[in-house]
Image 1: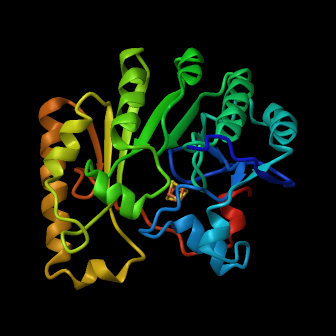
Image 2: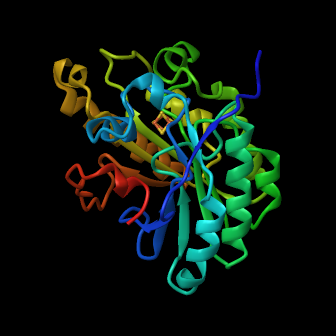
Length: 276
Ligand code: SF4
């Protein structure tokens, strides 16, 4: 199997931007345009990029391009964030540890080292595999995976370019074993007319983590074709919340208590996923 795919490059004018997700002082960066994971839920970042004409097709989205000047931009922008930034999230619009893309992983590691050198922790989220090198860095960093199923047939159909679930979970478990704060995004969770499964199987696969967030599938009309889809999500939220509660795992998302409903911002220019 081919492991190395040479990637095209783009340049950007800025990299780090403030984000409303993650509390005060939360920043994010997108150092790659596109994502070979090619999620078919569909991917919200892809929808935005396509709507605003930044990406012509799904096929183009799946051919990621590195931001060639990402490190230079970070070097320029980070001094201004000292004392202001509580964390930097990598990334809301691509995958920090994109599977089978060592160029992405290398750039992510370089960025983490650089950001950490300003005493700013990094939170990564991936559907790839967390590399061992990332686990040698600051223990202030946090690691997360997205996991909405443990059924490989689901993964092959809806997340075709991602790491197999055992590899994805093993990377997070290793981070946990080394003492890192670990979280799981169970989002976008499918309704049963999309995939029949027991949410407990998914939860039990990550019973070692510190935080779990459950979120529904948006931007897919099939969800609303499931009779009682709202009730389904409520019930699933209660199961996940109670399951987490018993185990002392922090829970957020559907039916979390107390649950100030997070307002989803109106669609905006995809530039928002990259920089302010
Ligand atoms: S891993 Fe994330 S950014 Fe990549 S295609 Fe899937 S949803 Fe989109």
